[in-house]
Amino acid sequence: MPRSKATATLLLAVSLCLAACCLSPCTLAAAPKGGKPLVTAITKDPATLLYTSPLKDSRPLVLDLSGPLIWSTCDRSHPTLQCHHHDCAHAHSYHPPDCSHTGYGKPDEEDRFRCKCTAHPYNPFAGKSATGDLTRTALSANATDGKNPLHPVSFPVVASCAPPSHLAKLPAGAVGVAGLASSRVALPAQVTRTQGVASKFMLCLPRTGAGVAIFGGGPLFLMTSTSPPAEVGVDLTTLTRTPLLSKRGSSSYYLPVKAIAVDKAQLQLPLATGGVVLSTRAPYTALRPDVYRPLVDAFDKALTAKWNSKKVKAVAPFELCYDSKTLPGPTRIGWLVPDIDLMLEGGKNWTFIAGSNTMVDVNNFTAACFGFVKMKPEKSGYGGAPAVEIGGFQMENHVLQFDLEKQQLGFAKLQIFTACSNFNFTLSH
Image (cartoon, rainbow, N blue to C red; front, side, top):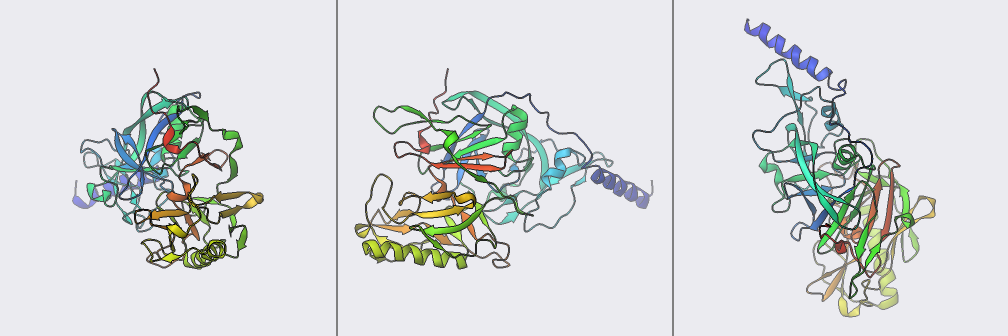
Protein backbone atom coordinates (compact mmCIF):
# COMPACT_ATOMS: atom_id res chain seq x y z
CA MET A 1 0.00 0.00 0.00
CA PRO A 2 1.42 3.47 -0.85
CA ARG A 3 2.64 5.44 2.17
CA SER A 4 0.07 8.25 1.82
CA LYS A 5 -2.81 5.78 1.58
CA ALA A 6 -1.56 3.80 4.59
CA THR A 7 -1.30 7.01 6.61
CA ALA A 8 -4.83 8.03 5.64
CA THR A 9 -6.15 4.60 6.62
CA LEU A 10 -4.44 4.82 9.98
CA LEU A 11 -5.80 8.32 10.68
CA LEU A 12 -9.30 7.19 9.72
CA ALA A 13 -9.05 4.22 12.10
CA VAL A 14 -7.92 6.42 14.98
CA SER A 15 -10.65 8.98 14.25
CA LEU A 16 -13.33 6.28 14.28
CA CYS A 17 -11.85 4.89 17.45
CA LEU A 18 -11.99 8.28 19.20
CA ALA A 19 -15.50 8.98 17.96
CA ALA A 20 -16.70 5.69 19.41
CA CYS A 21 -15.29 6.45 22.84
CA CYS A 22 -18.52 7.70 24.37
CA LEU A 23 -20.72 5.13 22.63
CA SER A 24 -19.41 1.93 24.14
CA PRO A 25 -21.22 0.51 27.18
CA CYS A 26 -18.15 -1.52 28.10
CA THR A 27 -16.94 -1.02 31.69
CA LEU A 28 -15.97 -3.02 34.76
CA ALA A 29 -18.79 -5.37 35.72
CA ALA A 30 -20.90 -4.16 38.64
CA ALA A 31 -21.27 -6.46 41.64
CA PRO A 32 -24.71 -7.30 43.05
CA LYS A 33 -25.90 -5.08 45.90
CA GLY A 34 -25.30 -6.11 49.49
CA GLY A 35 -21.50 -6.42 49.68
CA LYS A 36 -19.40 -5.55 52.68
CA PRO A 37 -17.78 -2.11 53.00
CA LEU A 38 -14.00 -1.99 52.68
CA VAL A 39 -11.64 -0.59 55.31
CA THR A 40 -8.05 0.59 55.00
CA ALA A 41 -5.63 2.34 57.32
CA ILE A 42 -4.61 5.99 56.85
CA THR A 43 -1.11 7.10 57.76
CA LYS A 44 0.10 10.70 57.96
CA ASP A 45 3.56 11.02 56.45
CA PRO A 46 5.73 13.10 58.84
CA ALA A 47 7.86 14.59 56.06
CA THR A 48 5.16 15.75 53.63
CA LEU A 49 2.14 15.77 56.02
CA LEU A 50 0.16 13.94 53.33
CA TYR A 51 -2.14 10.98 54.01
CA THR A 52 -1.59 7.55 52.47
CA SER A 53 -3.26 4.13 52.47
CA PRO A 54 -1.60 0.78 51.62
CA LEU A 55 -3.88 -0.02 48.68
CA LYS A 56 -1.49 -1.05 45.90
CA ASP A 57 0.18 -4.39 46.72
CA SER A 58 0.46 -3.14 50.34
CA ARG A 59 2.31 -0.08 49.04
CA PRO A 60 0.89 3.37 49.78
CA LEU A 61 -1.19 5.57 47.54
CA VAL A 62 -1.67 9.21 48.51
CA LEU A 63 -5.31 10.05 49.29
CA ASP A 64 -6.46 13.06 47.27
CA LEU A 65 -9.97 14.40 47.89
CA SER A 66 -9.77 16.43 44.67
CA GLY A 67 -8.31 13.65 42.52
CA PRO A 68 -10.66 12.45 39.75
CA LEU A 69 -8.81 9.18 39.03
CA ILE A 70 -6.39 6.60 40.41
CA TRP A 71 -2.83 6.59 39.07
CA SER A 72 0.39 4.76 39.82
CA THR A 73 3.53 3.41 38.24
CA CYS A 74 2.90 0.30 36.12
CA ASP A 75 4.70 -2.87 35.10
CA ARG A 76 5.89 -2.94 31.49
CA SER A 77 3.47 -5.77 30.73
CA HIS A 78 0.32 -3.90 31.86
CA PRO A 79 -2.85 -4.15 29.76
CA THR A 80 -4.20 -0.99 28.11
CA LEU A 81 -7.85 -0.10 27.58
CA GLN A 82 -8.98 0.74 24.08
CA CYS A 83 -10.18 4.22 23.18
CA HIS A 84 -13.75 2.98 22.75
CA HIS A 85 -13.85 1.75 26.36
CA HIS A 86 -16.54 3.55 28.33
CA ASP A 87 -14.14 4.65 31.08
CA CYS A 88 -11.76 6.26 28.59
CA ALA A 89 -14.18 9.18 28.28
CA HIS A 90 -14.61 9.41 32.06
CA ALA A 91 -10.85 9.55 32.54
CA HIS A 92 -10.90 12.70 30.38
CA SER A 93 -13.80 14.40 32.17
CA TYR A 94 -11.40 16.58 34.17
CA HIS A 95 -8.32 17.91 32.46
CA PRO A 96 -5.17 18.83 34.43
CA PRO A 97 -4.51 22.58 34.66
CA ASP A 98 -1.16 22.39 32.84
CA CYS A 99 -2.16 19.96 30.09
CA SER A 100 -3.71 20.90 26.75
CA HIS A 101 -6.30 18.43 25.45
CA THR A 102 -4.64 16.01 23.05
CA GLY A 103 -7.32 13.40 22.39
CA TYR A 104 -8.24 10.13 24.02
CA GLY A 105 -5.52 7.84 22.79
CA LYS A 106 -2.71 6.77 20.54
CA PRO A 107 -2.44 4.20 17.75
CA ASP A 108 -1.85 0.61 18.82
CA GLU A 109 1.60 -0.39 17.55
CA GLU A 110 0.45 -3.96 16.89
CA ASP A 111 -2.92 -3.16 15.29
CA ARG A 112 -3.23 0.11 13.37
CA PHE A 113 -7.05 -0.16 13.32
CA ARG A 114 -7.18 0.11 17.13
CA CYS A 115 -6.08 2.82 19.51
CA LYS A 116 -4.92 2.67 23.09
CA CYS A 117 -6.55 4.97 25.64
CA THR A 118 -4.24 7.40 27.38
CA ALA A 119 -5.02 9.46 30.48
CA HIS A 120 -3.38 12.49 32.03
CA PRO A 121 -2.57 11.82 35.70
CA TYR A 122 -1.92 14.98 37.67
CA ASN A 123 0.52 15.27 40.55
CA PRO A 124 -0.83 18.28 42.49
CA PHE A 125 2.09 18.27 44.91
CA ALA A 126 4.63 18.77 42.12
CA GLY A 127 2.16 20.75 39.99
CA LYS A 128 2.76 18.55 36.94
CA SER A 129 0.72 16.28 34.69
CA ALA A 130 1.86 13.31 32.63
CA THR A 131 0.47 11.08 29.92
CA GLY A 132 0.04 7.38 30.59
CA ASP A 133 -1.92 4.35 29.46
CA LEU A 134 -5.34 3.77 31.01
CA THR A 135 -5.12 0.26 32.41
CA ARG A 136 -6.78 -2.30 34.65
CA THR A 137 -5.04 -3.16 37.89
CA ALA A 138 -5.89 -4.56 41.31
CA LEU A 139 -6.10 -2.79 44.65
CA SER A 140 -6.60 -4.40 48.03
CA ALA A 141 -8.28 -3.60 51.33
CA ASN A 142 -10.30 -5.53 53.92
CA ALA A 143 -14.00 -6.21 54.21
CA THR A 144 -15.31 -4.79 57.48
CA ASP A 145 -18.27 -4.73 59.82
CA GLY A 146 -17.18 -1.30 61.07
CA LYS A 147 -15.46 -2.84 64.11
CA ASN A 148 -12.58 -4.87 62.64
CA PRO A 149 -11.18 -6.00 59.32
CA LEU A 150 -12.90 -9.30 58.40
CA HIS A 151 -10.86 -10.66 55.50
CA PRO A 152 -8.65 -9.31 52.69
CA VAL A 153 -10.32 -8.25 49.44
CA SER A 154 -8.59 -7.70 46.12
CA PHE A 155 -10.69 -5.74 43.63
CA PRO A 156 -10.18 -4.51 40.05
CA VAL A 157 -9.95 -0.83 39.16
CA VAL A 158 -9.36 1.29 36.11
CA ALA A 159 -6.28 3.45 36.68
CA SER A 160 -3.75 5.49 34.79
CA CYS A 161 -0.10 4.59 34.48
CA ALA A 162 2.50 7.23 35.28
CA PRO A 163 6.28 7.31 34.90
CA PRO A 164 8.44 6.95 38.05
CA SER A 165 9.47 10.59 37.71
CA HIS A 166 5.84 11.53 38.35
CA LEU A 167 6.21 10.43 41.99
CA ALA A 168 8.14 13.62 42.81
CA LYS A 169 7.16 15.19 46.16
CA LEU A 170 5.04 12.20 47.19
CA PRO A 171 5.85 10.48 50.50
CA ALA A 172 8.74 8.02 50.40
CA GLY A 173 7.53 4.64 49.19
CA ALA A 174 4.29 5.95 47.67
CA VAL A 175 3.59 4.56 44.19
CA GLY A 176 0.80 6.90 43.13
CA VAL A 177 -2.40 8.69 44.07
CA ALA A 178 -5.90 7.43 44.90
CA GLY A 179 -8.38 10.07 43.77
CA LEU A 180 -11.42 10.38 46.04
CA ALA A 181 -13.43 12.89 44.01
CA SER A 182 -16.98 12.36 42.80
CA SER A 183 -15.83 10.87 39.51
CA ARG A 184 -16.71 7.54 37.91
CA VAL A 185 -13.05 6.53 37.76
CA ALA A 186 -12.12 7.74 41.27
CA LEU A 187 -11.71 5.17 44.04
CA PRO A 188 -15.10 5.55 45.83
CA ALA A 189 -17.19 5.02 42.69
CA GLN A 190 -15.13 2.01 41.62
CA VAL A 191 -15.47 0.37 45.05
CA THR A 192 -19.23 0.97 44.91
CA ARG A 193 -19.49 -0.78 41.54
CA THR A 194 -17.19 -3.73 42.19
CA GLN A 195 -18.34 -4.47 45.76
CA GLY A 196 -22.05 -3.67 45.49
CA VAL A 197 -21.91 -1.22 48.42
CA ALA A 198 -23.41 2.20 49.12
CA SER A 199 -22.05 5.23 47.30
CA LYS A 200 -20.48 6.60 50.49
CA PHE A 201 -17.08 6.78 52.11
CA MET A 202 -15.77 7.88 55.49
CA LEU A 203 -12.45 9.43 56.40
CA CYS A 204 -11.05 9.72 59.90
CA LEU A 205 -7.69 11.45 59.45
CA PRO A 206 -5.14 10.81 62.22
CA ARG A 207 -2.75 13.22 63.86
CA THR A 208 -0.55 10.27 64.81
CA GLY A 209 -0.87 6.51 64.41
CA ALA A 210 -3.18 4.85 61.89
CA GLY A 211 -6.46 6.53 61.00
CA VAL A 212 -9.22 4.81 59.08
CA ALA A 213 -11.11 5.03 55.79
CA ILE A 214 -14.26 3.02 55.10
CA PHE A 215 -15.72 2.78 51.59
CA GLY A 216 -19.33 1.70 51.23
CA GLY A 217 -21.07 3.08 54.31
CA GLY A 218 -20.98 2.56 58.08
CA PRO A 219 -20.99 1.74 60.88
CA LEU A 220 -17.78 2.92 62.56
CA PHE A 221 -16.52 1.79 65.97
CA LEU A 222 -13.45 3.13 67.76
CA MET A 223 -11.68 2.10 70.92
CA THR A 224 -11.55 4.55 73.83
CA SER A 225 -8.29 5.90 75.20
CA THR A 226 -9.29 4.81 78.70
CA SER A 227 -7.78 1.96 80.69
CA PRO A 228 -9.02 -0.61 80.01
CA PRO A 229 -10.13 0.48 76.51
CA ALA A 230 -13.73 0.00 75.46
CA GLU A 231 -15.40 -0.14 72.06
CA VAL A 232 -17.75 2.74 71.23
CA GLY A 233 -19.81 3.31 68.12
CA VAL A 234 -19.82 6.63 66.31
CA ASP A 235 -23.47 7.65 65.99
CA LEU A 236 -23.60 8.51 62.30
CA THR A 237 -27.22 9.68 62.62
CA THR A 238 -26.05 12.69 64.65
CA LEU A 239 -23.51 13.96 62.12
CA THR A 240 -24.05 17.54 61.02
CA ARG A 241 -24.94 17.40 57.34
CA THR A 242 -24.40 19.98 54.63
CA PRO A 243 -24.55 19.87 50.82
CA LEU A 244 -21.46 19.02 48.79
CA LEU A 245 -21.23 21.51 45.96
CA SER A 246 -19.38 21.27 42.66
CA LYS A 247 -17.81 23.88 40.44
CA ARG A 248 -17.52 23.68 36.67
CA GLY A 249 -14.05 22.54 35.62
CA SER A 250 -13.09 21.35 39.10
CA SER A 251 -13.25 17.91 40.72
CA SER A 252 -13.03 19.31 44.28
CA TYR A 253 -15.70 19.13 46.97
CA TYR A 254 -17.03 22.61 47.81
CA LEU A 255 -18.97 23.55 50.94
CA PRO A 256 -21.74 26.19 51.23
CA VAL A 257 -19.82 28.38 53.69
CA LYS A 258 -21.56 31.74 54.07
CA ALA A 259 -19.21 33.33 56.58
CA ILE A 260 -16.41 32.73 59.09
CA ALA A 261 -16.66 33.77 62.74
CA VAL A 262 -13.91 34.20 65.35
CA ASP A 263 -15.09 33.84 68.95
CA LYS A 264 -18.67 34.08 67.59
CA ALA A 265 -18.00 37.42 65.88
CA GLN A 266 -18.78 37.16 62.16
CA LEU A 267 -16.20 38.52 59.72
CA GLN A 268 -17.00 40.22 56.43
CA LEU A 269 -15.07 38.11 53.93
CA PRO A 270 -15.33 37.64 50.12
CA LEU A 271 -16.01 33.90 50.29
CA ALA A 272 -18.48 33.83 47.40
CA THR A 273 -15.63 34.52 44.99
CA GLY A 274 -13.79 31.21 44.72
CA GLY A 275 -15.71 29.27 47.36
CA VAL A 276 -14.51 26.93 50.11
CA VAL A 277 -13.08 23.48 49.30
CA LEU A 278 -11.99 20.43 51.28
CA SER A 279 -8.42 19.37 50.54
CA THR A 280 -6.06 16.64 51.65
CA ARG A 281 -3.46 18.30 49.40
CA ALA A 282 -3.00 21.14 51.89
CA PRO A 283 -1.46 20.21 55.27
CA TYR A 284 -3.05 23.31 56.86
CA THR A 285 -6.00 25.45 55.85
CA ALA A 286 -4.87 27.95 53.23
CA LEU A 287 -6.69 31.22 52.65
CA ARG A 288 -6.51 33.71 49.83
CA PRO A 289 -4.78 36.92 51.05
CA ASP A 290 -8.02 38.95 51.12
CA VAL A 291 -9.49 36.32 53.46
CA TYR A 292 -6.35 35.42 55.38
CA ARG A 293 -5.46 38.89 56.70
CA PRO A 294 -8.85 39.69 58.29
CA LEU A 295 -8.99 36.22 59.89
CA VAL A 296 -5.48 36.40 61.37
CA ASP A 297 -6.03 39.91 62.70
CA ALA A 298 -9.39 38.98 64.25
CA PHE A 299 -7.95 35.88 65.94
CA ASP A 300 -5.00 37.79 67.40
CA LYS A 301 -7.29 40.57 68.64
CA ALA A 302 -9.73 38.12 70.27
CA LEU A 303 -6.95 36.12 71.96
CA THR A 304 -4.87 39.01 73.27
CA ALA A 305 -7.95 40.89 74.49
CA LYS A 306 -8.71 38.02 76.89
CA TRP A 307 -5.29 36.62 77.77
CA ASN A 308 -2.63 39.14 76.76
CA SER A 309 -0.72 36.28 75.13
CA LYS A 310 2.81 37.15 74.05
CA LYS A 311 3.71 36.85 70.37
CA VAL A 312 7.05 35.31 69.38
CA LYS A 313 9.04 35.02 66.16
CA ALA A 314 7.13 33.35 63.32
CA VAL A 315 7.84 29.69 62.52
CA ALA A 316 7.32 28.74 58.87
CA PRO A 317 4.85 28.22 57.36
CA PHE A 318 2.95 30.13 60.06
CA GLU A 319 2.88 33.86 60.71
CA LEU A 320 1.13 34.16 64.07
CA CYS A 321 2.95 32.38 66.92
CA TYR A 322 2.76 32.74 70.71
CA ASP A 323 4.83 31.89 73.76
CA SER A 324 3.18 28.75 75.13
CA LYS A 325 3.60 29.95 78.72
CA THR A 326 1.26 32.88 77.98
CA LEU A 327 -1.51 30.82 76.33
CA PRO A 328 -4.56 29.59 78.27
CA GLY A 329 -4.30 25.86 78.89
CA PRO A 330 -3.36 23.41 77.62
CA THR A 331 -6.23 21.00 78.22
CA ARG A 332 -7.14 17.59 76.78
CA ILE A 333 -8.77 19.42 73.87
CA GLY A 334 -5.86 21.76 73.29
CA TRP A 335 -5.21 25.42 74.03
CA LEU A 336 -8.24 27.43 75.18
CA VAL A 337 -8.07 29.88 72.31
CA PRO A 338 -11.01 31.48 70.44
CA ASP A 339 -13.16 29.11 68.38
CA ILE A 340 -13.27 29.38 64.59
CA ASP A 341 -16.70 28.79 63.02
CA LEU A 342 -17.38 28.00 59.39
CA MET A 343 -20.95 29.27 59.10
CA LEU A 344 -22.84 27.03 56.67
CA GLU A 345 -26.14 27.52 54.89
CA GLY A 346 -29.18 26.52 56.92
CA GLY A 347 -27.77 27.94 60.16
CA LYS A 348 -25.28 25.10 60.73
CA ASN A 349 -21.70 25.58 61.85
CA TRP A 350 -18.48 23.60 61.59
CA THR A 351 -16.62 24.72 64.69
CA PHE A 352 -12.92 24.23 65.28
CA ILE A 353 -13.16 24.02 69.06
CA ALA A 354 -10.37 25.34 71.26
CA GLY A 355 -6.88 24.68 69.94
CA SER A 356 -6.91 21.05 68.85
CA ASN A 357 -7.54 21.99 65.21
CA THR A 358 -6.37 25.60 65.25
CA MET A 359 -3.02 25.69 67.12
CA VAL A 360 0.17 23.89 66.07
CA ASP A 361 2.83 23.28 68.74
CA VAL A 362 6.36 24.16 67.56
CA ASN A 363 9.89 24.55 68.93
CA ASN A 364 9.58 21.61 71.34
CA PHE A 365 6.24 22.91 72.64
CA THR A 366 7.70 26.25 73.76
CA ALA A 367 5.50 28.04 71.22
CA ALA A 368 2.22 27.46 69.44
CA CYS A 369 1.17 28.93 66.09
CA PHE A 370 -2.19 29.72 64.54
CA GLY A 371 -2.49 26.81 62.09
CA PHE A 372 -3.83 28.71 59.08
CA VAL A 373 -1.59 29.88 56.24
CA LYS A 374 -1.69 32.37 53.40
CA MET A 375 -2.42 30.74 50.05
CA LYS A 376 0.37 30.83 47.50
CA PRO A 377 -0.62 32.30 44.12
CA GLU A 378 -0.83 30.12 41.06
CA LYS A 379 1.13 30.99 37.93
CA SER A 380 -1.77 33.15 36.77
CA GLY A 381 -2.33 34.73 40.19
CA TYR A 382 -5.38 34.02 42.36
CA GLY A 383 -7.95 34.03 39.56
CA GLY A 384 -10.04 30.87 39.90
CA ALA A 385 -8.45 29.91 43.23
CA PRO A 386 -10.77 29.04 46.11
CA ALA A 387 -11.16 31.61 48.88
CA VAL A 388 -10.44 28.89 51.46
CA GLU A 389 -8.86 25.46 51.14
CA ILE A 390 -9.63 23.49 54.32
CA GLY A 391 -6.50 21.47 55.01
CA GLY A 392 -5.75 18.17 56.67
CA PHE A 393 -4.82 19.52 60.13
CA GLN A 394 -8.25 21.09 60.54
CA MET A 395 -10.00 17.84 59.49
CA GLU A 396 -8.00 15.51 61.76
CA ASN A 397 -9.88 13.58 64.46
CA HIS A 398 -13.18 14.34 62.77
CA VAL A 399 -15.49 11.77 61.22
CA LEU A 400 -16.16 12.89 57.64
CA GLN A 401 -18.83 10.96 55.74
CA PHE A 402 -19.14 11.70 52.02
CA ASP A 403 -22.55 10.60 50.70
CA LEU A 404 -22.03 10.77 46.94
CA GLU A 405 -25.57 9.69 46.11
CA LYS A 406 -27.14 12.52 48.11
CA GLN A 407 -24.15 14.84 47.57
CA GLN A 408 -23.90 15.53 51.28
CA LEU A 409 -21.09 15.78 53.81
CA GLY A 410 -21.68 14.57 57.35
CA PHE A 411 -19.13 15.67 59.93
CA ALA A 412 -18.46 15.56 63.66
CA LYS A 413 -15.53 16.15 65.97
CA LEU A 414 -14.59 13.01 67.90
CA GLN A 415 -15.05 13.02 71.66
CA ILE A 416 -11.95 13.56 73.81
CA PHE A 417 -11.85 9.93 74.98
CA THR A 418 -11.09 8.55 71.52
CA ALA A 419 -9.24 9.41 68.30
CA CYS A 420 -9.11 8.44 64.63
CA SER A 421 -6.08 6.28 65.46
CA ASN A 422 -8.22 4.08 67.75
CA PHE A 423 -9.78 1.80 65.12
CA ASN A 424 -9.11 -1.85 65.93
CA PHE A 425 -7.18 -3.17 62.92
CA THR A 426 -6.86 -6.63 64.44
CA LEU A 427 -8.21 -9.08 61.89
CA SER A 428 -11.46 -10.65 63.13
CA HIS A 429 -11.72 -14.44 62.93
